[in-house]
Length: 155
Image (spheres, rainbow, N blue to C red):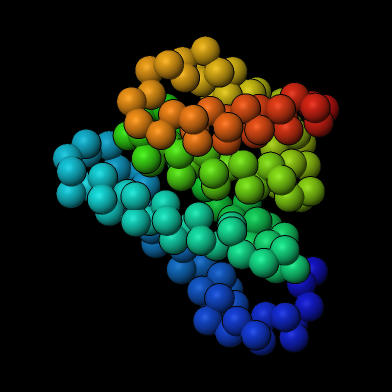
């Protein structure tokens, strides 16, 4: 559990997480509309969640635990499958940060379904990297790092 004095340094973050405000962004992540406007909204929502998981080490476990109680992983996996290059990169970053957290890795490896879903997405992208149009080197790095983390810590 995170130290309450740590959260007092960032009171707005504690309010956002305890009120589950990030869940209100999920309908934008779940949208299948591919118009430019919806993609900008989806990317902004991913950016907010990406900023949460990028936070300081002493509160990142609290944030990851909070995100794991929601449907963030299936949403990010779907975006990795169907999104634009930039959305795929941010969704991959979010899952990578979750995997780098001990609780996040345990959560994904806890059931065969979760592990297999993440494994299959990363295994699929490992072979399809060349289809990336822009910033593929950043994406490749994130995919390989997260894929390696899953494989090395397989159940």
